[in-house]
Each structure stands twice: as C-alpha cells, then as structure tokens.
Image 1 (tube, helix red, strand yellow):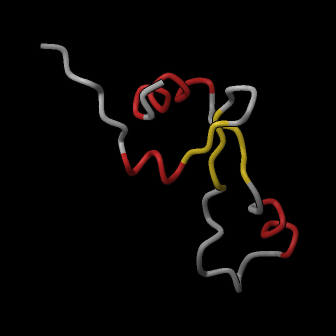
Image 2: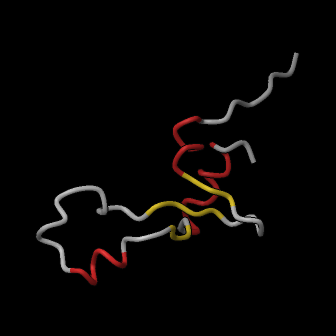
Length: 65
C-alpha cells in the first residue's frame, strides 16, 4: 500500500511558496540583539528573501512539492 508523504511542519511554518512557484523565507539575524546593529542592517533584514538554488530541492521535498 502506498503512503502519502507528510509535510514537514517545521518547514511549512518557515517557508512560503509564491504564485510563480518560488520559495521565500524570512531573513536571519532580525529577532534579537538589535541594539548593536546599524539601522541599514536592520532594514535589510526586513521581509522575505528567496531560498538559495542549492537548498531549493530539499525545501520543496520537505513541503511535499
């Protein structure tokens, strides 16, 4: 009997799939210890960035794509 592949719930919470099928994730280093970081650095950490090409296959597999 064939089994369905389960979605990796940790990955599902961390990655978003765009309408075009690209993968995005939140920038690292933006959660705490922000006092020593410059405003320009903190601005760069805002929003979502693309998942690297090297990791795309692994992330898609975890999301069941």
